Length: 428
Image (cartoon, rainbow, N blue to C red; front, side, top):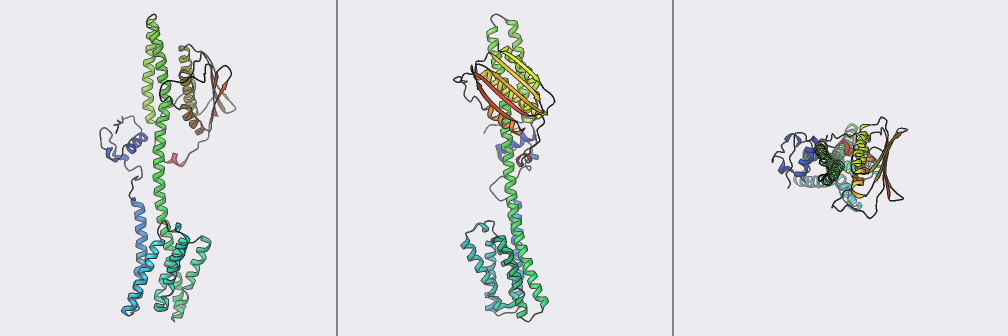
């Protein structure tokens, strides 16, 4: 495992990313020490987390309470030992069926399985009424809840109501008052709703926790992609400039030491800026100016003996647009230096009608020319994604005489679009 050191300038998002990538066994190793971050992300392990367990425990406690109440009602009837044992067996069978119906995957069971289990629960609910009379009526609440859990809504709710109304009869047949009949009907409906509600609540808690974990993993992935994208966009340009100027220094040293010294100073300045870029990438605070990048690109191209023509008509634009277009310009210049044999380049940045259009065109874009270095990059793909984030468009065109044109166009002030993954993303 590669050891990663987080300096004081590292952002909260960077700390979360490194902690999630290294795993819990590295949280106290080396210089990475930030225990306050361990509770920010949901548990990503394989064991069931506390919240779903608690919801299931509450559901089980409610079912057991209803079961105990039914047992007390049966025992209060002072039945014979045999009849009491039969009642307890039937109660346990109903309780087992209810546990099966309250499982999170019960609704996805095959239809024949639902028919069998619901049919068995219906028989165990109504047949014992012939033996135990109104004392057994409380078991109808479990049946009412199971119907709501397993059947489609258009069938479940009428069936639920029918079960509740059917409990009006046992007390009347047993010679009890109408008030007792109404009480049994109401308690059956209430029990059914409670069983249904607690089961669905436990399922929703589990789904919510799983979704939160997925969003956290998406946020970690988003942060990782941001690191890779920004490092490519920022350092690719700087390293290409350092390479170009180093080659120029190598040619100037024998006959023009003063010019070579000037280029060395510029290489040192670019190197320091690259170090600052690495730090700002980690903190997520890297903002760039399109106008400044155009000036820097013009100076770099002139140093490379490339005839450069710049057109800049820029008005006000959001900082995000300026940063993304500056990154597009950097990538275009990097590709020009690495993948072409250009001797002329045109850079245009024009803002009209609330939209900004950046065009970089150069010659010498030979189709068979490729940078011989491995992993030459995928910057245009990264920038296409970044342009979409600001409602923009990035495209490339090839023209006559080996010309290559990159066009980026976007609103000067795009509307903010935020996804659920953005909402859960680590703070940068």
